[in-house]
Length: 278
Ligand SMILES: Nc1ncnc2c1ncn2[C@@H]1O[C@H](COP(=O)(O)OP(=O)(O)OP(=O)(O)O)[C@@H](O)[C@H]1O
Ligand SMILES: [Mg+2]
Image (cartoon, rainbow, N blue to C red; front, side):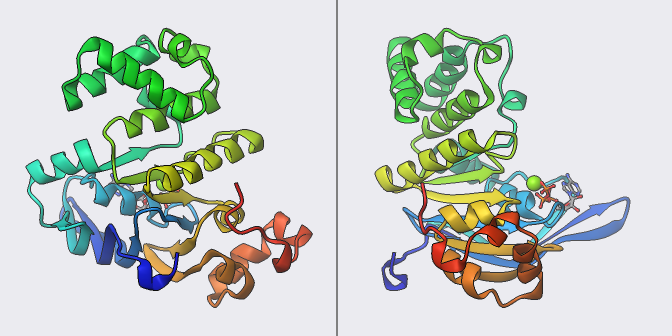
C-alpha cells in the first residue's frame, strides 16, 4: 500500500503508561507511536517484557488498575485514552477484537465450540439461536476449518491447538471488527500450523480489509509476513520501518542484534527474503 493511500484506522501517538502500586510509580510504556490502516498487517516485535502486550491491551481498554496514561490511542474518531467506559465497551464489542497465544485459556472446556461462538453472537448481535449457529459455521468455514457444522458440536479438547486458534479467530470475527489485535497467536504452535494461521490473517486483511496488529517475538516471521514492523525495547519503539527495509537495512543496534541472532537469516540472503509470504 502506498504511503499516500493510507488513512490509519488505529493511530497510537506518544503513548506512555505507568502503573502506580503502593505509592510507587513504574513506567511501562514511554512515547509509543504506531499506526495501522485498513488492510494493513503490521508487527510489533521485541523481547519479553518490552511492552508489546500492554500496547495492545491499551487499545481495548485492558490496562492494569492504577494505570496512568498519556498520549493518544485513536481508533477512527475515538481516543481510547480519554474515552468513557461505555465508549471503550462499544469498541470492544463492535470495532476491535483480540486473539491470544493460548486459545485453551480463553475457552470454557465444558462448553461446545458452538456454545462458545453462539453465545457471543446472540449477546452482541442479538441473533436467534439458528442464525447464530449458521453464522458460527460460516465463520469457521471462512478460517478454513473443515466440516464446520460438525466442529460446532465438539468440545475444546477434541480440537488441536491450531484448530482452536482458528476458532478463536472465527469468534473474533463474530463482531465484524475493523481491527484485529493478535498477541503471539502462533507462539504455541508448530511451524506448519504457524504458517497456516499467518496465512489466514493475511487472507482476512485482504478479504475483509481488516487492520491487523501482530505481536510476536519472531522477527523472521514478522519480516516474512507483515507490511511494517515496529521493534520495541524497554517500553519504547526503537525502530519502525517497512518489513523489507528493516530486514535489509536496519538502523538500530538492537534490531541489528535481533537480526544477527536469527538462524533463518544465516540461511537466506536479503534478496531471497519473501515479501508478503503466505
Ligand atoms: N498487570 C500488570 N501490572 C503491572 N505491571 C505489569 C502488568 N502486566 C505487565 N506488566 C509489566 O509491564 C511490562 C510489559 O509487559 P508486557 O506484558 O506488555 O510485555 P511483553 O512485551 O508482552 O512480554 P512477553 O513477550 O513476555 O509477552 C513488564 O515489565 C511487565 O512486568
Ligand atoms: Mg506479551
